[in-house]
Image 1: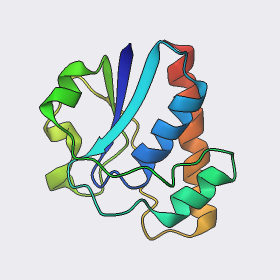
Image 2: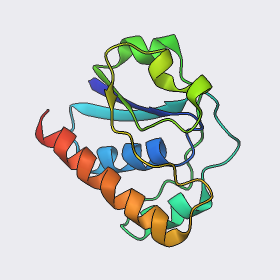
Image 3: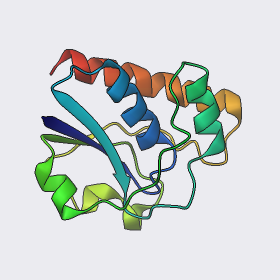
Length: 130
């Protein structure tokens, strides 16, 4: 099983949405996981809502702390973007793709939908190149 790790700071929005899309569209030989450098207690409710609108349920997901084991076991790592430069995963992981996607935290549902759609396009592009 090949693993793709999606990382951001809180693991509450972008990386969770990317994991959801990846799990839905990636080939069976691949597993998508997500984690953050400063995980929070709950997934962004608007991210959950936006993903339900495209028939992907991330409501049971949990924010996870990125570990060295996750990094070493992953075939590739994608940084979703950094809102907090001191906790940016790119500081801790070498050889990572950086998608530079806007953080949905504190945004309107319309903005979260736009962010969701940009993540979906990026994940589809990633999957097409596997």
